[in-house]
Amino acid sequence: MQTSATGRLINNAEGGRQKAEGTTGAQRRHAVCRPRTFGRRERHAGFTLIELLVVLVIIGIIITMATLAVGNGRDATLKTEAQRVATLVDLAGDEATLQGRELGLQFTQTGYRFLFLQPAQSADKPAQWLPITDDRELRRRQFPSGVVPQLLLENVPQALPVKTPKTGTPPQVVLFASGERTPFALGLSSGDNAGGYQISAGPLGTPTVQRTGAAS
Image 1 (cartoon, rainbow, N blue to C red):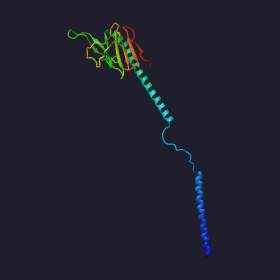
Image 2 (image 1 turned 60 degrees about the vertical axis):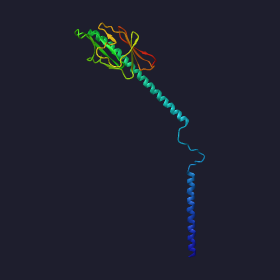
Image 3 (image 1 turned 90 degrees about the vertical axis):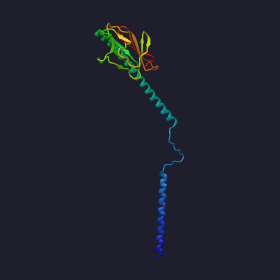
Image 4 (image 1 turned 180 degrees about the vertical axis):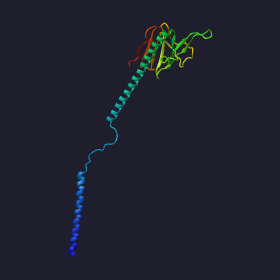
């Protein structure tokens, strides 16, 4: 009986030692496999100076490209509008000759319209200028937003009305049935120093369009 008890005690002791050795071995293997982190500096969240400089450069490039795009779009709008006015003035001159009556061109700060001279009906109804309403091409038109007009007659700047003048008000430019017209120049700009376009129309001939001010 004593021998048997002693054997159990020995076996229990050996089992405990093996279990302890197994645990210690697992810990050693874990320590070997775990990456060594001593001696390394932890990187804090945030941007370096170089990263910030790169971001600032990219932002600057984007702003520059956007500015150039807006400028090119504005210049294209002015050019298109100037060419439209020149074409319509030429067309109206042809119409005046074909119809054998005087037409007129009346500018405001926001747009323009074509008129025709209605002959006198009687002593009580003298000749007067009336707007053209039945012609699709010579209809009343508005300048695009941001376009600033400047009318010159005999190289003298004219004050343009803000609102459309009342019926019967004479136009600034007359297109005669003979094919002649009132010489004028109309500048279109965006109101800054970036330049614009000018329509020049002499007494005869086709109106011309040219760039004015700073280059595009």
